[in-house]
Length: 371
Image (cartoon, rainbow, N blue to C red; front, side, top):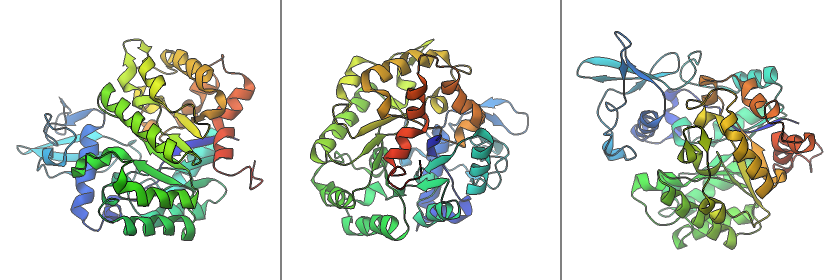
């Protein structure tokens, strides 16, 4: 089985991402689009530009840094804005995307063509908070898609009961298969406490009672920030050692460790990652972060992947793509083949585990007799 452990489906922006306050959704969308590593240009003559019209470069990851620029989602996978009367655009989704949406029919068509059997739908606010949309995607394609629940991480401490109810409904009533937790949203709302602290305890205890897997997206703009997040994750796993955990996207988002023609992970990272817990897994999702830096099939990543197999073991690595974002540079089949056909140090048995076997077992398909 080929199982993509990191995919997306999302509605168009007219739905405001399921936010009660539409402006909050647009703040998230503008901030994320400003920070996407994609080309910008001036509309009238396609002259190269930057995203400084969207956010103050001195405060790139802060709602307070957003600029009033008539920001909007445009046609053909672009976002658009205005600076001094000039129109600017940024290509943040593939040009064939309609209405800035990615419905499940399109994802499944891509899966069919590339030979991918299953995919797990991940979450992030600018792609929508509504669990109902994700549940509908999985209902329409029950043998192809599974989906994660999300809660507004920044509301857990102030309103734990509401966030617990939202999570319980997503899992028990809507049939979603785990939780997506993105710690970097907390800072956007002025919350600097570690997310394993007392204010989060009732929520995490509820997660433990549901016995669902948690997909943690942790990172940082610097190595020190990332190491601090890994230490928090380690403490969390010490408190909840029986819960299954996936570190999404890979170590540090990979860009932290890409230098010229090498991808070098510091020993301090390997020391901080909770590899000693057998319930810890990690995604290998190189392409979406490094495809703008290195050409396909990125031979620069092979030594790091080989090192991860040796140090962690192939049974705890999971392939993912970040589709449709990855389609800006590679086809979906290339996103599979850069590992399947260009990493000859991986044995056939190891390849089966990494490209789907681990995810299928992790997501309970073995128990259901579906693999």
